[in-house]
Image 1 (cartoon, rainbow, N blue to C red):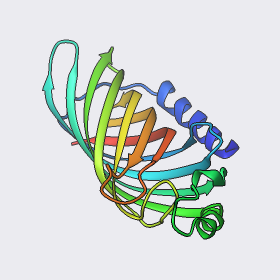
Image 2 (image 1 turned 120 degrees about the vertical axis):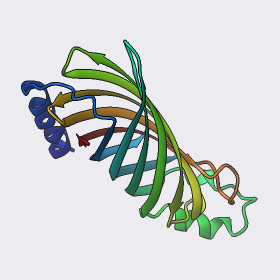
Image 3 (image 1 turned 135 degrees about the horizontal axis):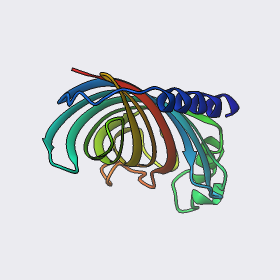
Length: 204
């Protein structure tokens, strides 16, 4: 965790000491790295880190705001463990065996295509703040007590700060993420995590 915090601090230093101007590019491509964990609870642990490609397209610009759509293919690497084995109730078939299985630490891989909408407020020529909402289909490769293996959805709400440096954009965004399968598969309690992302993109 210490190395991750240092990475964020170094990123912020680079973003805030450089200067440039917004070239008004409509399209930008980039890359984000993020990490996070579950909201504190007694039932389970869930820690994750992830990599996202970014493709932005500006659809509209007014005097005060910019509106963008984006696509974000993502690979998420997580670890999960059930802490409260009573979460698996006695009426569950083979509940003793499932309690033993689910309380083991598991590695979870998620493959996601996030599709989002972003509203940006420029602050001068260099900085901007924004809010972002996205939803996307996902495949998870591990069965847990909270979610079945296979198809699911990832929902993300984020707030961010961006610095323009010529055609480069340095980005930092805290976010809240919910993952579930909308009842399409068996287990659907899902995961709720808080995350931080840092990234860089390039205007085309």
